Image (cartoon, rainbow, N blue to C red; front, side, top):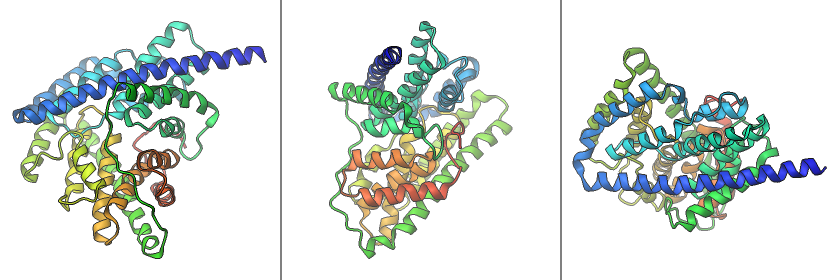
Amino acid sequence: MLRRSLATLRYAVLAVLVGIVGGLVSALFIGSLNWATTARLNHDWLIWLMPMGGLLVGIAYNYFGSSITAGNNLVLDQIHEPSAGVPSRMAPMVYGASVTSHLVGASVGREGAAVQITASLADTLVRRMNPTATMRKIVLVSAVAAGFGAMFGVPIAGAIFALEVLQRGRPKFALLGYALLASFVGDRIVRALDVHHLVTPNTPNVSLDFALLWRLPIAVCVFALTAIAFIKLTHVIKDQMASKIRWAQFRPFIGGLVVLGLVLAAGTRSYLGLSTDIAEVALAGAVGLSAVACVWKFFFTTISLGTGFIGGEVLPVFIIGALVGAQTGRVLDAPVALFAMLGFVGVFSAAANTPIACIFIGWELFGANALIPIAIVCVSTYAISGSTSIYSAQRP
């Protein structure tokens, strides 16, 4: 009993330490990406460097990052079966490549990158302790929880996501306590440093009347199909680039050229980078938002990620979901802000197969007033999407 208690205490201390690492990494990372975004907005000419930025990222990964190209899937694989570990070089390479991608305007995210950076640093530190397989699993699960929860400001959802993303439909909650510790510590550090997250409004009370209930199944189908299309197209682009372009370093260079072509075709730069501003417009009711904003953001993101820009897919999927939800609400003559919020969580639930985490994301970001429709949408989109996932290392 004493030995077990001491082991639990030691693992809890490790989870707290991982949370501290995750919180500091997230705060610094958000600050760096905010700087990159501000620089791009203040210097319009930077986007014309996107092909060269892509080439730089491609060269770095081609010559120095072959062991880390799997990204988040590498982290998940190491949790399932700890072996060589998460390479130490992943942290600086993902950090630098993500900042470069955002500086030139690639439509990529940040949460996935933060998870990789935190996992790399945490695993590098714990390897010095001659860890057991259990210890390394706890550390990496805590790193995923801290990176996700701190970057998004959703500590409960971050902890559940870290477990749910491992095994589709059958999360094992034995490590939930450690994940919660790491996620809450990381989130508290980010908040203490006054780092700001995506602005999300609280929803008013939502009544489950017939007017809403008949619209929900239509929205659920739209959200699930959006997630499936996002995954399929991103994979198709990756596969085509791998088969057609022999030199891997040129793939993001070509992607940069294509994205610049999309900028000219769309006539706006709003879909570059994170696009949190248009997501906030959608969540506030989509006043003045283009009806095809969701389509443009969809293609900007799939091409950026599919051709090799670094940053992650988490936040872009949330934002695409919000834009799709807003337009769905318009078409169905439903509350646009509510449907943007439902799309925000519903598309990601289907894409990542994490319905429980997405229910808590909805609760932590938008309040409890719409918790029932959030739960209905998240569970339903997950059920429709089946085994499709943005994480190939996720197990059934």
